[in-house]
Length: 351
Figure 1 (cartoon, one colour):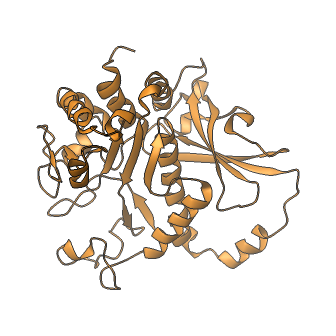
Figure 2: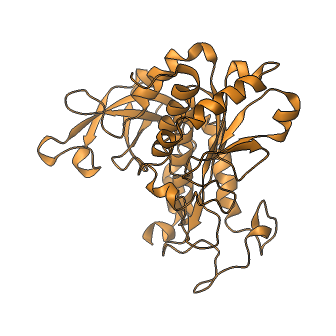
């Protein structure tokens, strides 16, 4: 691919040019109509924004992103969360944007608006989240990065948290991405704890950064929850979750009450936990490879084959958090966190 063979030394010559003090590059980033991928474009401001809302509302061609018809294609970008730019450095910024149609209603892929409203209603419960984003690296031909061409590697056990040339492929990408997240202000890639709406903002930015870093190496990132069919683990986005009541002494009672509420809304959560309303997760949640069955709700202490896992330490301490292992790797974190709070805090499915 051309992007992988461009001479980075030539690029660096231009990137090292001094930037005028009164000029700032701001990259606007949004979720496209697929609900899975991000898009971006940059504008120059003549001031350094202090927060996302300082940046002007902008627009883009929604007919090219599955978000509008060609005859009425302008879609609005509303800046909502700002991060430092680890690629351009200096005062340059990255901003997450919400997308709105011509009539100022949110686009179908804008789940942030309702999530933020729910988090505001549940503010007193102080919901914390940490999402464990899993992903797969691919060669440009779609084959898993590091896998032998035309064949399969050995059984997957040795690769988990592995060390060594015969067990690890693409560590440079992982390390570069980690540093990029830290520089940007993302709470690293096992993102959290984030309170309320920050979880979705930080995870979407982390995904954007991962794809941008992988560009530098000519490697493809996929968030498909089961990129290789067969006897291989899939990819999830396990959601660690707690409220103030769960974190305080005796919080295990609040955790168990939340699990009971989650059990009553299993089907609703499955629909919210991947962009295709359970169809993607159906390939992953089989009851094998450390997953629960998509059809049944289960919970247990230290059980990675359950829908909800209570960590061993939490069981011993009597307070802490729960882990919802059902969200797929390509989930929308705004939908995941919203549905969890609606179920466990608000008991509210009408607003």
